[in-house]
Structure formats: C-alpha cells, structure tokens
Image 1 (tube, rainbow, N blue to C red):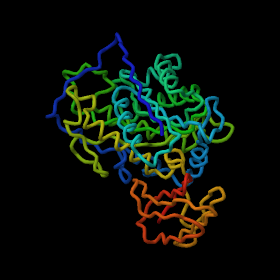
Image 2: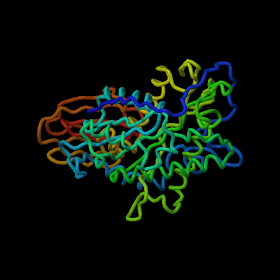
Image 3: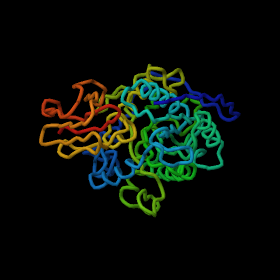
Length: 403
C-alpha cells in the first residue's frame, strides 16, 4: 500500500481559531448518540442508524455491499486496472480531522493486511468548516486537487471518503433544528464531493470529539466549535444517514437515479469528557492541546486508532481496505482458478493445482494457521473463536466469517 502525507502551509487572514483550555469544566451531562439505542432525547431515539441500531439495517446491507464491492483499483482515467490501479481514499475536514487522518494513515501504512492498491490522501485544511467546503468554488477543492496531483492520482480514482466537519460559525444549539440544519449542509457537501469525484462510492462520517474543555469566556474559536455543538454533531450525521436509508428524494445511492454516494458511519468520537462511553472511549484534558480544541498527540493517537480499527474490522469495508470479498463459512468463497476453495459445514477445504503458501490471520493481523498447500487440505474452522478471518494463498486473498 502506498500512502503519502502532503502538508500545506495555509496563511489565512480571517478569524484566528484559538481558544483556552479549562480542565476544571464539568461534563455536559448528555449521552453519546451511539449509547442511546434504547433511549430517547427530546423524544428522538438514539443509535447511529434508524430504530436504535448502531449498525446498518439488515434490509440495506446488500445495497451497501453492491456499492462497496464495486470499489476496484482504477487507472488515472477511471477505468478498471487490477494490476497498477489505485483506490484513493480522501480525508475531508479541518485541523482536527487533518491530524486524526494522519494518525490513521500511520497505522494503515504499517498494517500488513491493508490493500496494496490504497492511496490515502489527506485533503484536510485547518479553519475550513462545512459552510465553506460545501461550495464548489471554495479554495478547499483547489487544495484537494493539488494533494491528489502530488500523489500521482486523479479525481477519477477517488472512491472512498472519510469526513469529519461542522459549521464553525453557527452558534445555534437548538435541538433538533440545528442538527437537521447541519444535516442539510452535510448533504450539500456530499453532492459537491460527488461533482468533483464521479467514481466516489461511499462517504464515511466520524463525529467530532469532546469540546467541553474549551473555556467559552476566553475562546476565540468559531462559535460553532464550542460545546454543546460537539454533542449535536453526531445527531446531524445520524439524521443525514437516516434520510438516505428511509428513501428521502435526492438521497438515492443505487441505480440510475443515484444522486449521492452511500453514506455510512465510521466512528462516533463524542464522549462526555471523563465519562466513558459504552465502548470505553473517554476524553481526558491531556488529550487536547493548550487551546482545549485541537487534539494533542495523545488525542490524535486515540482517534486515529479508532478510525483504523473501524476500517480494518468492519465487514462491509473489507472489500476495499483489505482487498478481499467477505463470505460466510457456509458458502464457498469466489477465487479464480487454478485455486479453488469450498467450505463444507465447519471445515474449510483448499484445493490447489499448484504449490502455494497459505495462511489464516485474524482481522487484527495475528497468524492463526499456515501451511504450504499442494493439492488438498482441510482446516476445521470450529477451532477458531467467532470473528472475521483473512485467508491468503499466494497472492490471493478472501475473508470468512466464523459465527
């Protein structure tokens, strides 16, 4: 996998995004949207997806899969190129997203299971809110084009995007109106991105981290960056994605009428300060720099690890992140000859007409089995714990699920 980081020094003669940290500020006293699968806030049920779910609804899985399975290495002009083509993943946002995506890049670069065709392009620019980025004429997209050009990539090769953003100047905190309004702006951003990147298949969203350590009395940061706007950010993403799932006109991502890429969650990064989320995430004052807004190296590492963990373990992302297709242990994987592979019951059978090195890894890269396959070999899968596994035979790969 080839990854590059290009840093631009941008001098902006507008409002300085600085603030002051106050570690004594109490938590907000609210729950993260992902912790509210069985509860409501102001009469609205939580969960990242509709009906209190934190994963995509089952009736949409195959639509998502059909879109994501279409992500393949592309040439500079956007045609399929399985040998030298690229799958470009862009990071979109401002200063915190820039450092978070860089932390993800560092982890993906050292991930032995990452797709060798991936190119991770960090297009984030400090000080850029969604109110600027959703405009096609904004300088953000000129900078993004320079980043792609510096990596030897074209706009036609961009197929995946990761986004974290907010309206930096909107001080409104009225719920649910402000979250619905931000969802409208995110919709415009998605349409703008689709206009620049015609092969963009999926946009993943992460919510903002905690902003409660910013001292509002001393803050010079944009009003849209102060608490409790950070908490409302996740609700806006939820509303945006729910519109697509429930069939709102103009949000289609499949078929001839498709107006947008598929919109999905990456990570819900908001936790109420030191109060841990159900998944264990919390934000210590040391996770932030002296302004209380920007992440410290500790916070960058924390967020980058979460992004990497999601992309490296999410079942639907396997096709592009690992360069594999996902199959159940009860159905045969699809692998081109001369190698064939079938799964019968709880046994994985390899049959190869040529000698090849074979190995099975956990999704975290831990080797659990290896052997030279020459002919036929049977592997009892019931000895493996439940989870997703990656199989490599020579240069070929696929994944299987162990229930």
